[in-house]
Length: 200
Picture 1 (cartoon, rainbow, N blue to C red):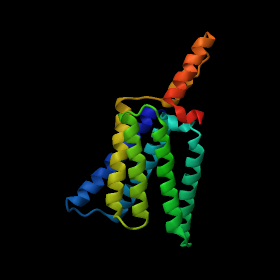
Picture 2 (picture 1 turned 180 degrees about the horizontal axis):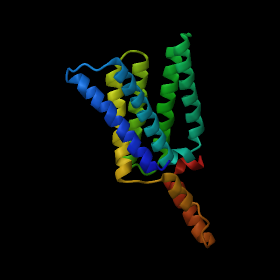
Picture 3 (picture 1 turned 90 degrees about the vertical axis):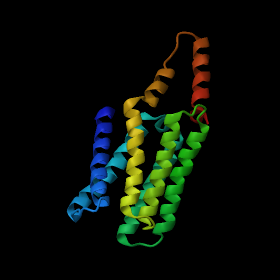
Picture 4 (picture 1 turned 90 degrees about the horizontal axis):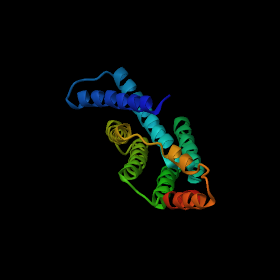
């Protein structure tokens, strides 16, 4: 699927959840069946939005992505623990979410150039992981947690849609073999300056 189409789907799902939430907040009754679809739309919106931001960013080329995959797998394990009513759900979830925040925070810190897009993506990771954690721990109402998470994801995806950029493609172009050794050294130095986390 093309990234632009994926972005449009994410925004559509976010809009659908926003409409359901707005109707509820205006005092109208919403059937439980519709809320089930709205929650499903919110989950898919957050997951697809984060996947799009992942695919279009430089994080997927970073060595830190392996640790990110580990903490995502740990979070999936905590969901299974919660479904099965096994113990240690809260500590495992806290470790997984804090791990996501720390790993992406380190990735953000190591970037030599930090633009608006980078700051927005950092906020997406921090806010979504915080809201999902608080929701799963029943500390924040589901509607509020999803409203905040879906809102920040849609904002980041809208920013990507208005200013599309593929960080990995740019990195691949930077790695293309130049004509002379001097150009090779210059390209390597520039790459190391722009993405120091790739040379740790």
